[in-house]
Length: 302
Image (cartoon, rainbow, N blue to C red):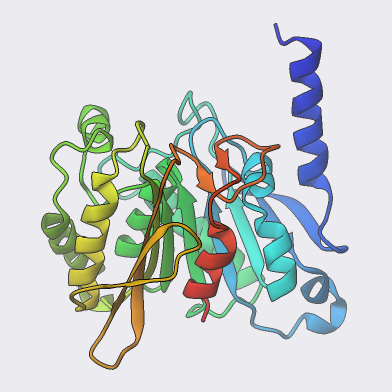
């Protein structure tokens, strides 16, 4: 049974998550069997904005988390209010995974969780008149792996991806192999790139990617971010990388022959399995790190 202190903390998280940012609306919704939250900034919630074609961020929480906890920890709603973009938070239930992890490691067959999430994104994008070339998916941990799944299997929807503490496409199929991937075993960026391009089929296109990892992460081995860089470099057709200012972290940027930045990779010293620069009131955050939410959106939406 939870103690009084723990109950107060949980109540505080829920209350903080339900508060709107500058009068924006944090809606509850359901599509088929999937619950979700949708943050609509004040300007888009106004009736005169009905004809707008906004940008949408899809935010995928990590294991044990909820959309409300993830919104609080990342500060995505506040960032969305400033940028006038929508944020869609799909929710994972305990029936689908006892730890609320996204089942990113399952086979990609029709009806898989990956395809269900793509259908949810299409549904909300159609209902909100979202510009289909302005959808980015960001995720933490299991949500990061699932974000990569969506980028590779639904390229017509996903133009940019932010992966925090996740790993490359199809590095582990099945629960046991998925755990091995998280531990840094059998992680192959070149094989992931080949699988990703095959999954994209004729809709293949370069993907802008913001990749983050903690140097001290013992849940998802940092070798995963190295493989992600390799994977996206091959998918995007870029090579090499140059160190650029990173607010006390190691940041490497990969550009194409026209000097366009396609990939940024951050390795945050002293950080374990957590969201860099996040709010300490939520789970899995590392407040001292660079603000991953701000820097990620700066890069993905430029």
